[in-house]
Image (tube, rainbow, N blue to C red; front, side, top):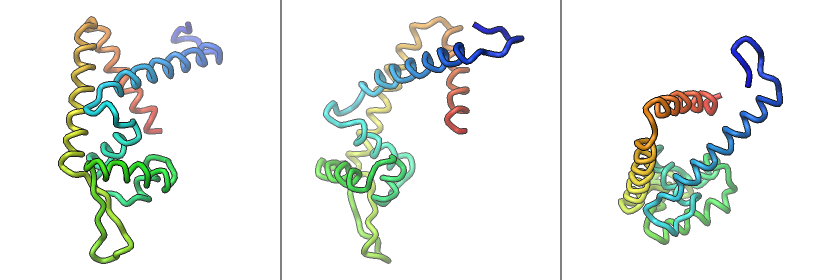
Length: 149
């Protein structure tokens, strides 16, 4: 462990990075287990969440945002459309442009999944001492800074 007077050596920094990565992945995996529909994939939920947060998108916009190919996104959107969670509609000004948006059922899935995930995390946090909850709140702020780089 380094002190504030000495710079971290690369071994310490590497171990810290690995610990943070593993803890983040384990927490994310545990949160993803809390979902409104057990059979919905993480990729499918991510599409619904993007549409709820950012509004209607074209297929290309969704593919770019989720960093997948257009054919892959088309399959995901097709399954969600078939299940009744989203719709595709042609733009009035350009019939080639198709906009994808949530249905009320799709919006409900996002709202319920987020509610379940927040409830699980709130319950888990309630079991921690206040000092550890404050440390996690500070860590969350640092993590947001990291991903905004």
